[in-house]
Length: 218
Length: 218
Image (cartoon, rainbow over all chains, first blue to last red; front, side, top):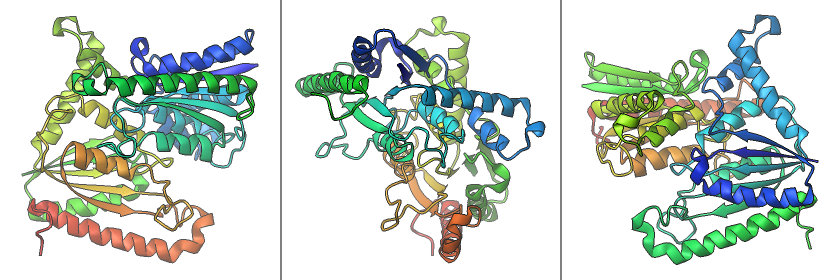
C-alpha cells in the first residue's frame, strides 16, 4: 500500500494545512504501518516557473528536436504523474492564498496535466481515493462579509473531482488568521469551533482514506 | 503619459489575449503617440517559483539578516510594484488555463502584493484606469454544459477591482479553441461572433483607457 502526499504551504513550520494533513496521514499510518508515503513538498521543491510552458511546447515537437529544457520539463512531468498513478491513495494539503489558488499548486497541476495518462483524455486516476485539506485565512462562508472571496476551493474541487475523477473528500478550515491578525480577535470562539470540526473531519476522512472506501466507514 | 502592459500567455506567437491587447494598445498609441509603454512579459520572463515565499519570509526579518534570495525577491517585488504605480493606465492580457488562473499571473500578483504600497493596506492603485483582456478556450457562460468552469475571471476581477480598486474594464473572449480543436467545429459561427464582440470591446475600452476616463467616451 502507498500514499502520496503533497504540501503547498509556503511556511512548513507554522502551516495549518500541514497540521490537518498530519492527522489524515496518522490515520493512514495506523492502518498501514508498513506502507510507503511518497511526498512532494512544493515549499522546498517548487515546480520551476518555466517547466509547464516547456512541457507544453515540447508536446508539439518531435523527440529528436526537443531542447534540453523541454526534455527536463517532460521528465519532471512524468515523475509528478508517476507519483499520482503509483499511489493507492492521495492526500493534498493546499492553502488559499490571496483569495485564489496556491501558485505552487497551480504550477504543479498544470505540469502534471501535460502527461497524457492524466491529461485531458487520461482516465488513470478515475475513482482513486483522495483527501484534500484546504485552509483559509478568513471566513468566506455564505452570510459573511466576504462571501464569494474563496476563489480557490472551487477550482481545487473542479480539477480533482471533475477533471481527474478522484473519489474526493474535502477538509476545509477557515479563519486560520484568527489569533494571528488582532483585527479578527472577536471571532476566537468561532475559529476554535471551526478548527475542531476540521480536525474531526480530518480524522474521519483519514480513516476512510485508509480503508480505500469512502462513505463506508462505520 | 505612460502605459503598463502585462502579458501572461505562454504562447506569444499565437496568443489570442495578446492580439486583443494589441487592439487596446493601438488605441492608446493613437491618442498618446509619444507615451512610454512599459512591458512585463511573463512568458519570456516569469517570476521565479521561489520569489514570493522569499519576499514574504523577508518581511518578518530585519534587513541586516536577509538572505541574498530574500533581498533579490524584495528587489523584484519593488520593481514589479513600481511599474504599476508609475503608469497612468494599466493593460493586462491574461488567459484562463486549465479552468483556473494563469500560474504566471498568480505568481506575479502574489509577489506584487508583498509591496506595502500595493499590499493589503496599500491604496496607491485606487481608481487607476485599467483594462483586463482575458480569453477562454471553451465557453463557460450560463446555460452552457461547462457553466461555472471559469475559475479564473472571477478571481482576476476580485484582485484587480476589489483588492487594488482599479477602475477596470474587462474584455472577455470565450471559445478560442474553436478552429483549433475539431470537436468544437460546430461552434464556428458563435465563436466568430464572440471574437468580433471582443474586438469591438477591446477598441472601445482602448479609447476609454486612452482618455483615462472610463464610461465617458462618446
